[in-house]
Image 1 (spheres, one colour):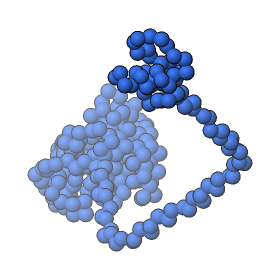
Image 2 (cartoon, rainbow, N blue to C red):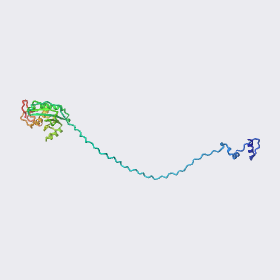
Image 3 (cartoon, rainbow, N blue to C red):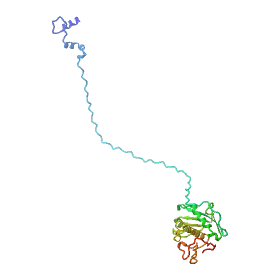
Image 4 (tube, one colour):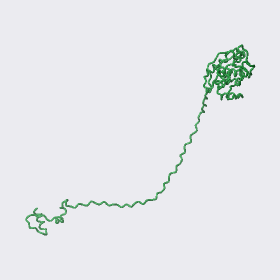
Length: 274
């Protein structure tokens, strides 16, 4: 240390008269020994300032219209023809109700046996069994057509073409249509017989006629005997005499003149009224 102090003192421009080792000025030391400067005395290196890089603004370009892709219609694959077996047509609904069951044979049958069916149009709303019972009772009556030698039997097991007679009870429109096939005009009001078909008009069955007001059951027997009489070969008849029973083959719907009401073809004694 003493050697270091002396050397510094000798080299100093301004001598210091002192017996101690005086520290040389810091500027001198710094000039000659820069590495001896404490790091704390070293001036801090200024942080680099950020420099802004100038970016030229993008020159806007005029937009190029985008070309929409042309839609190509998709072509659906043509279905291959398939061979299908023809379906059977739907079974038509039968508009008629056949009265079931049947009866035994009534009447002598000397002139023949008439097997018959009774069918009711469904839209009439009538009960087939009830209507058939009225028909059966009319044909079996002692004053009925059995007096002429006919026999009758209702059957439901035989087809329409196998029986000798069918008693139909139909609406006025259906009655008109069925009767027109035989050249008969029923006008929505009256009944008819054509071939083996006895067609009873629902209007008359339900309402009767003024002559039989309050006697609907009697009128029903009259209309049955009248149309079945046509089936057996009888034509129309007139009033035979004043006060005489009106024949069932008389068109009583249009009046009976001087006759009196009657619904049977034969009198109690078996005499034919006609």
